[in-house]
Length: 43
Image (cartoon, rainbow, N blue to C red; front, side, top):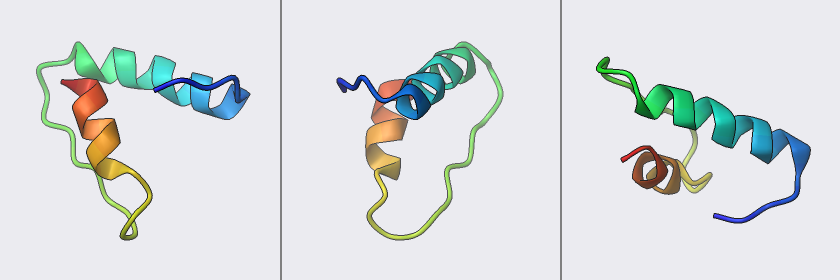
């Protein structure tokens, strides 16, 4: 995923941190906001 948006860059840094954890992560939200993309990015 590519972006120059500051909020999205902050989210990506957070995802990098979460991807290193051994804990389970639950993604929730409305239909269509990109949870599947986030999950793929974390793997």
